Length: 225
Length: 261
Image 1 (cartoon, chains in turn brown, green):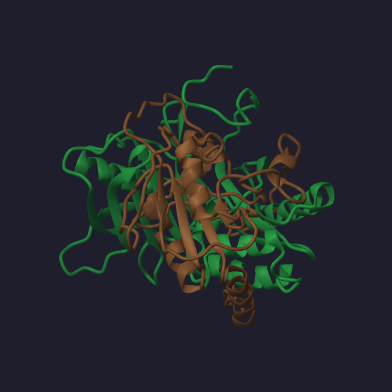
Image 2 (cartoon, rainbow over the protein chains, first blue to last red):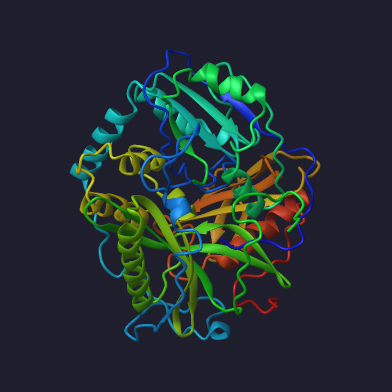
């Protein structure tokens, strides 16, 4: 992603742990990385999330895609435009030297495959049901839709680890919070903070995680690796 | 290297590259057990304040030239296959780049579900859980690349929207606040009483202090117009936020604008 120059310091940002529903813990604490999406409407989960697998209490199982591709998967190539494109000129097209753009709506948009959606939902529900889940996000309130979905799918309990409160509807139920002390003034810093969110937990924060997931079997979603 | 407030495995790694003029775009894809599902491209809204580049959200409004779209999809498929071959990768990733006058110029690969995946609307499960299912192997082969692509790509094609996210150091006086907005081409205004809005513009709290956010979606005959870059509309929304709440976000320029550089 593109960064910023000229960052300003935010003295108020802090991180929190938020505990959602209660219930017994079980299963292994393998970290599934995932995207919670970036900022949703009326929330401030402004950081995109991960796609790697790592145990939050130790080495990951299997290849770690995030690590495995660091510095090794950058693509640098130029592919010429197809002259058959069509549509209206974008603003600034002359400046860019882009003569035309495709309209993307020239043909009918194929509907999303309903049977495929059902397959996805069936697999996801089976994977979530009965799991304790730790959700790493930059803003507690940005995790609201994910927490609701996890509860609806049968997760036994959900722990939200976040760098701040954010904007939007508060999470349902009682929420317990512990500051992690992260600071971010730009999107780039926020991504970096998300990458290392759980790297430097205090003893109290470790205790909170262990109390939530004593047998270390929780599914972990989010973070950047 | 000592960078205040910064930490992480990437600290100390620098990449120096020539500036390439164009529209920042990204294409998402998912590596499954049997192949690579490729989504449609999204525009990374990187606005400019002189020589500063300000990340300001994502949009699925922009249509790159058809040939560029094809090139982006081919690049994503190749990268996905290479990720699988080299490191056994599974799950979402994206290829970022610039749509230039000379074609598609890829700049980086993000091995995560980056911002474009957050534009998905209509999926019956959170996309993060879908990604977890693939990464963790819950699917036992059921989530093929065809299943993923036939589900996600049409959802992105059908919902053409702009999601504005511009961080601020602190909440301006009189905020948090929000207004309903209407979009007229590349301009934004507060919706009149009783007028159906195209979305909402708000200032709220964030880990960075505060954030200006908006999501406006294309509707038949209303909202953002699919085709052109949504950069100018993002600029207009931030100008409107500044007029309403003194957010200090006025006067930015979109990619290729006369104020750049």
